[in-house]
Length: 215
Image 1 (tube, rainbow, N blue to C red):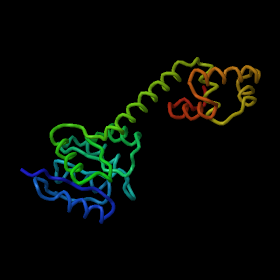
Image 2: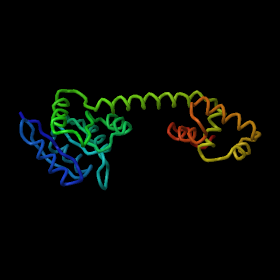
Image 3: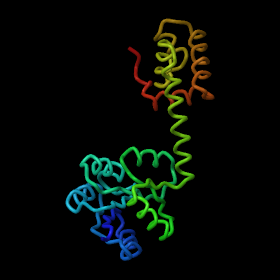
Image 4: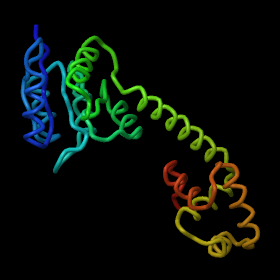
């Protein structure tokens, strides 16, 4: 029985090209969608074996959100993300959304067909270099989040205010302490988080959700 594929891409030429290289030899194009919303609706109606999903789509939801919605429907189809972007963050988001694979658009026809076969065999398909980078970034993000959690209550207060763009003098006034005390807190925060300056500390605070106003 042929593997049925739903192609999702907001560019008609891209869809036509994918249809041309994927049709035949055990593969069948079940349908094509030009938007994330259309992809979700067609996946629910057609229930293909594979949804070949572009990460970046035009208006409406993107491929990652469409993948989340398809996964939430509990359909047996498996999503393979197709992207121009060799960014580890995209790979992590795609896998977290429920994708079974991530293939770059500069892959050869044989690589794309091979990815479809591997996913149908129950394997996850991600370029090795991208997977390694995604895992490294994930480990680093987890370590940084743990470092934020290990700050004292006062240090988290100071970090939140740093993330809001306040100077040491402004933070000192807000917390009724001396600027020298705040300077010492900021230096300890930077050391504990393993960053090089207060700007990086502020970015890390925003990523970890520690940038809200202190109670």
